[in-house]
Length: 150
Image (tube, rainbow, N blue to C red):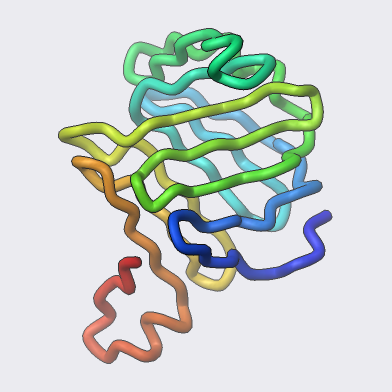
């Protein structure tokens, strides 16, 4: 299980501290949803890559949630997360204990992915390549309830 409860912001990325959380469910509709331990959820709505090594050596298999072409992701069920990075460019990168790497780039027109978790945390890859970040503490600091984007 993760040793740190909250995500940590860095200059160009957020480290989500999901290390050790298991994939407890996979749902496929027009999206690919990975349910994780402790109430975290990863939702992919745009094309993503699933590889068995670094992207520069193995681009992997293309996952297309919109057309339910995501069968390659099904073996992630029951595996544990090694790392999850939400880049401020809107790109998502997850690594799993089985050596699988899931990469979802930002989309020019749509929200490519989102991750939600306890404490009101929400990370969204915004259209055009930006990252929206919300937390319950940010909402409490902002009386209008608007997002706290970084």
